[in-house]
Length: 146
Image (cartoon, rainbow, N blue to C red):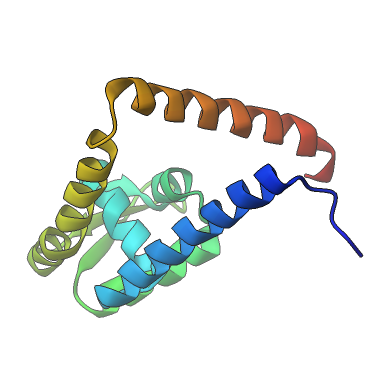
């Protein structure tokens, strides 16, 4: 079966996969799974005591994936959970978790920011605008598959 794509879309698709592969390599280089890195990253963006569902929404990961990553990070002593209302679980970085985030998430975030700000303001705005347009159109065109 041959897919109905154009050379430009194939190039775009390869770049998307290359970006995902790069983040996988970064996570491994930092000694973390992809999902553990995402959870730590999200916890640095969200307030201490955030909910697991906040992490799911921030990372676009399933509840099961976040739950597994949280359990691993909790087992390593990097975060702790506390019950909330109903089934809610609040997440808190431990001192070791804060130190680990400072050694992993902070350098990654600094490098992401450096790469983004190395582009002109116009290119930054264009990248954000076109990515938003593509995601909106893709969501619209795939609605029947969800």
